[in-house]
Length: 208
Image (cartoon, rainbow, N blue to C red):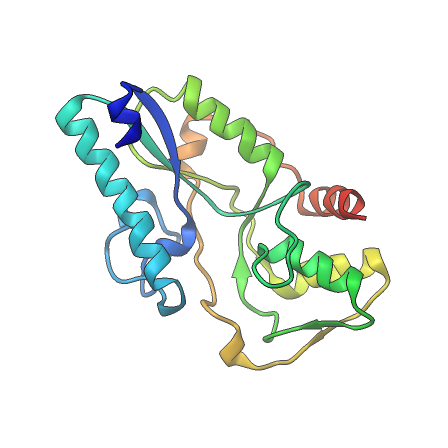
């Protein structure tokens, strides 16, 4: 509404992969966003984010604006939110490992997630803003899917602590939400994503 009021013709709005339907086929693509309810743990957040896309499409249709929604996977990197109470997955794990005598983690560590390094996402958002000429929603992600346990082990090895999981399945949340980057790669087939190991090492060094 604010962009429309001040005659902004091009704007980007960030959604999230956790707003996709809970019961769905994988990998998820951009056309599946509204095909069923989200996981119960993401209910309010997911529906509000979905309505961002609905509103963008309405403005584009009625006023010929060029608003586009991007859907990044889990983001991590320097300058992230490392809070132990409301931080993102990787930065919160880094802080927990660094700040406590024991590296305790809720759940089994088996759930799978896709992660994108913040500087990679910055490059992709810049591309969307200046070179992606369409206004249809696009997922910004690589296709590597890793377990929480693998991430915890990399962090633990870097900080010389062994991860300890509660092994309570009820604390795992949604097991997976694999998203497809097929659409992105149809435009940027040679885009080089930062490896998880490199991104984690850089992020941990920055945090320390």
